[in-house]
Length: 186
Image 1 (cartoon, rainbow, N blue to C red):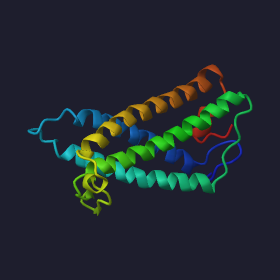
Image 2: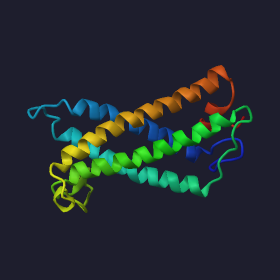
Image 3: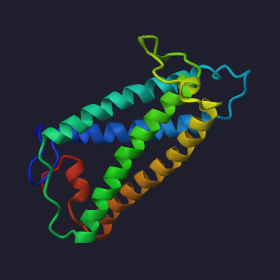
């Protein structure tokens, strides 16, 4: 089924979820690796270009994901979930969404700090709307870079908490939480 039901997520919501998860983990790993590259590495310019390009495409993907989420009903909470689990789940989801958008903004600010556009896989360029100079922030790329790094660890931390909660529901509680995000109607 394409759309969500009262009991399970539709295949499109599942695809949005799992593609987002894989790309975010991949960007995190790429980010960790590329910060240690030296100027003489063959990947010194290529890795950040790939990271920026995928990050911007992910931003568009996440916007589409949110639009789809708003246009769709959400499955009802599993009946065995406690009220605090449902509330915590909602909070973690919002932290993940806000964290992703904060990552997109800080990444954009790193890339456009000196007024240069962001090139996306040589397909198109996203212009610099704000610069460090226009905002009066010296070394904006460094400031935004620190924020970007901190946010990356926070985002991965909350994503890990989210994954651990799904595994707890599946293996300890033996409920359908994880199965629903796999598109299984239980």
